[in-house]
Image (tube, rainbow, N blue to C red; front, top):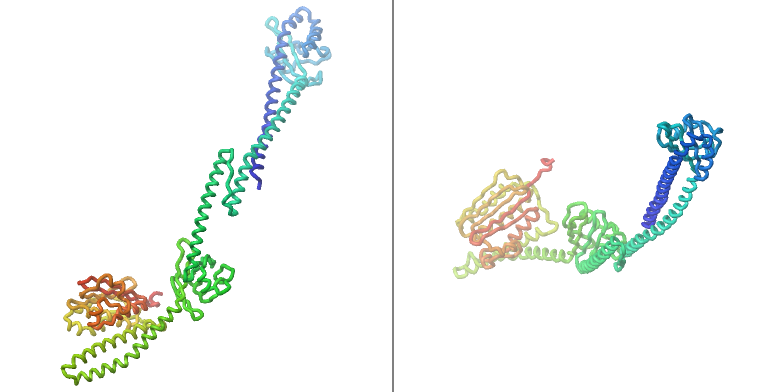
Amino acid sequence: MRSIFTRSFRGFLVVIILLAILAPLLVFGTIRSRFTSAAFTDLSRTAEALEITVAHFLEHDSASLDSLTDIIGPRLGIRITVIARDGTVLADSEEQPDSMENHRTRPEVICAFNGRVGNTTRYSKTLGREMLYAAVPVIMNDSIPAVIRTSLFFSDLRSTLGQVGVDIAVVTSAVLLAGLIAAWFFSKSISIPIQSIAGVTRKVEEGDFSARAAPCSIRELDQLSTDINGMIAKTMQLVNELSEQNAAQEAILGSIVEGLVVIDHSHEVVTANRSFIEMACGENPAQSNDYLDYIAIPEFRDFISIALHEDVSKGKVKSGGKVFNVSVAPVSGTDRKVFTIRDVTELENLMRIKRDFAANLSHELRTPLTSIKGFSETLLEEADEETRGHIETILRNTDRLIRLTDDIRTLSELEHPLRTLDFEPVMIEDVINDVMGIFKRQADEKGLLLDVEIGKELPPVDADRYSVEQVLVNLLENAIRYTSSGSVTVRTDFRGKYVTIVIADTGSGISQEHLPRLFERFYVVDRARSRNRGGTGLGLAIVKHIMTLHGGLVRVSSTPGEGSMFTVAFPVHHDPGTES
């Protein structure tokens, strides 16, 4: 690739050479034309000056005409020829007229006999040389008896033109040399600043942001240098800011306890923090950026492989006796995904211990509580009026403890990782009708209106029938328990992919600050009221867990003094045969 100096100097060189060739040619051509024209003018004027003399000799002494031309021609340095009308040469200053051929057909002679001055350049057969001719008519008594022709050897004119050409060549050579020197210096004045600017950009490319372009005497290049210096300063500022941000980011990533890795769609590991390397890459992580080589634990590789090609937002990985929760999030505007890994082994162990403890506790308490209830009922039959009240208190609290242990056992079973539900097509209308019969007498005793509004054409839901009954029982039991007057209404509807069940009551309602925690275990709005009415604080937690296992939804809205409304939504059952 040619340099800018070579390009510019070559361009100047071509232009200068063309001018050095064309200009002399044009000048020499013009001078030659002017010299020739001047020669013809001089020859014509000389011939016109001789016209009177030649006319006199033709009229009085034609025999002396040749002697006249022999005398005048050499003195004037030209050839003089007198030609009669029939083309016969009457006199000539260079040759004997008798030895010369007829000139009637000469162009300049024909033109002169027609009354005009004839000029021509041609080869002379008589002298054997190229000559310039000018012929003038000799007018006598309104007739042209003869023609005076003056001529000049073209070699004489060529000698003069040759000297002029030499002078032009010398001047052209000097101008060419000066032009080449000027072009060299001018090309250097352009190329050197550009090469300097190019050197600065190379230094910046190598990371040297202290490099600056020098000022230039050429306005455009000086402006370019100023702009490049400003760009370098701005780039250096941006690089420093990015370096600070990267350092802060590295510090943040290094301080995160959870493992974090970013992987693009081509399987390249973009970044990974220290925690991830310790969790998934072993003691000596591979140097390759391909996650298949970078990650040592097969379970992590398998999960990441699925998450990169499918829409996965979270998951759980078990490896080497440890349990990890993995969250997946796409990076907006790129093909990258962020994987966040958290070691939940201790939390899983604590949950297992708590789950086993709750199951064992409920199992161990069930037998003595049953015995206490049995003996209390026996004592109640034989008790007098004074002790009957105490025994009834024992029975009431025993029943509450039994319900509490049953709810604890139910919740522990639902939370067990091996817990499975018997999913089947379930008609919600049938389950509601069965459950409503359980609470009919209880509602009548409190004077409550128990109303059912079944939507039209409800499709079956994909659910475990016993779990659906348990959800309805817990919600209806709470609605009737906390409603003193008015009604409890059960409504169903079909919306999109879900069949919804709404249980609304006209009870005391729940304040807004309690709603976010309403489905937590053992959370009660009013502990004294809940204890008096036999609540365990686990019913709604069981409802939420069942709905989670079904892939359904549970919502609550309430207004104090007006009542509450619980909504559960079960996914509609899809028959694979119907879909296909």
